[in-house]
Image 1 (cartoon, rainbow, N blue to C red):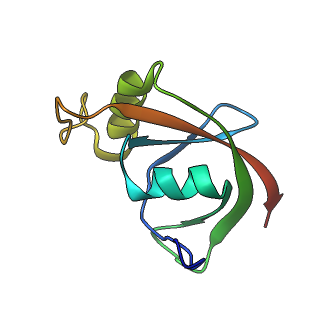
Image 2 (tube, helix red, strand yellow):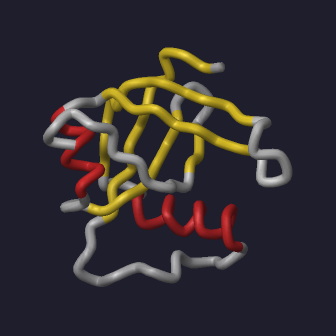
Image 3 (cartoon, rainbow, N blue to C red):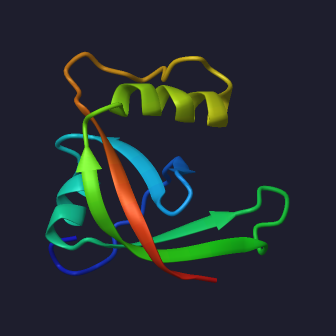
Amino acid sequence: MLDGSPHVTPMWVDHDGDFVLMNTAEGRVKLRNMARDPRVSISVADQNNPYDKVVIRGRVVAKTNEGADAHIDKLAKKYTGANKYQKSRPDETRVIIKIEPTHVC
């Protein structure tokens, strides 16, 4: 955040092999924070055992609008089973955020 404190929000995640991919919309606080400071931390916990987790630290290396609408639909299918993202708004521009992991534990 502006005061240097972490901004923590639940996010759907994906990967393309070497990079972690997230999807958000233009104008969101998290996108502004990542533009100012590209360092991110991701924690993924097992739903059946929250102590079984993976933590990834990395840096945002790219963002793109290209393919972002299809990507959020892919994430919706993965996480909810829906063929389309149900909370899409016509006034939103979706963004794919590409993160290069620097530390995984």
